Amino acid sequence: MTEGEYNEVVDKLSDGVYRYALRCCGIAEYAEDAVQDAFATLWKQCKGVDGIEQARRFLLVVVKRRLQDRWRHDAVDSKYRDESAMFNGEGYDPVASFDLQESLEKAMAMLTLEQRSLLTLHDIEGYDYKEIAEMTGEKYNTVQVTVFRARLKMKEILLKMNIKA
Image 1 (spheres, one colour):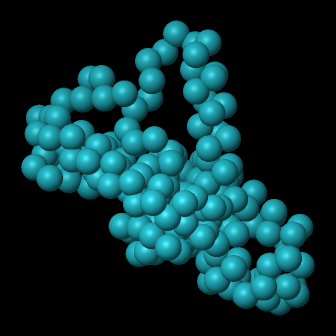
Image 2 (spheres, one colour):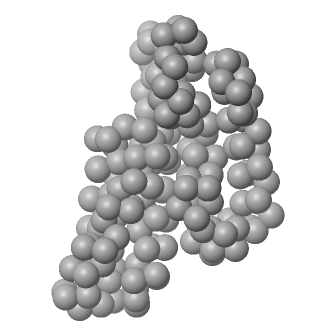
């Protein structure tokens, strides 16, 4: 990949990769860091990447892995602090929030990173199960089951919030 091709990839994919990262983690700062790291990694390894689709897959996988690392770090870090988990649902007041988008974002935040990632790729970004399996290195059946379970969990969470799914 040449410098010009890399710049074209940045121009065409940066917004979509950022949206994916933000939907996965829900924290703009984490999403920005993961996307920046993914593009830096792409630049370092650009000789092995040909074409915009291969670059997209590469970037999404790197973003997912960086967010998983961050999630693991935060999980260990929170173990040593006397704070309640950020998205455990405690203190949620269904009367205080009538905004469906906000409720969906809260429900997404309660999923595991793996579930958020695959659900975002399938239901929001529009990739089919086969493409997701190829991008993530997961088995086809694992992708299907994870997306199915994520949808069930979303439904359960939304019902607890008194939002009809």
